[in-house]
Length: 136
Image 1: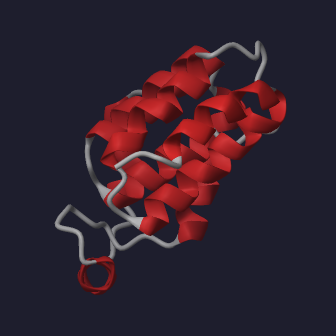
Image 2 (image 1 turned 135 degrees about the vertical axis):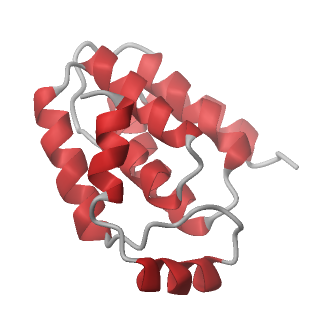
Image 3 (image 1 turned 180 degrees about the vertical axis):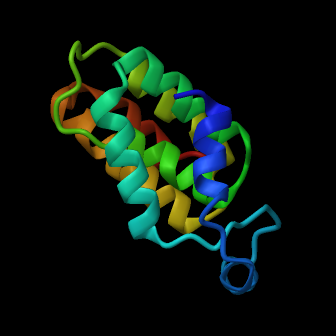
């Protein structure tokens, strides 16, 4: 699964009318495709099953970099997995790299679900999270 194929899969289900409603609701100037959460969930679940971790991380980051609302949601959902083997810091580092770009509660919530799994896997990471509470 290349980033181009993943983006094409997302774009193939675009709903321009719903995208316009989402743009008005979220009030953030970025591209919207008008996809439901269920659509993003289904695609992410399918890709999680077939992609090894390294490829999943690369795809998640590539989708994030598009700045498309649903691509960012799907990127986060690619990392929502209770057990990631091996449990190294690569997934946690990717999640942290996205933090400065949080400008939407919906995107932040999606990423938080992925982060929650990484905190459960290694509770020592809470020391890092604690520093975020004083961030500007």
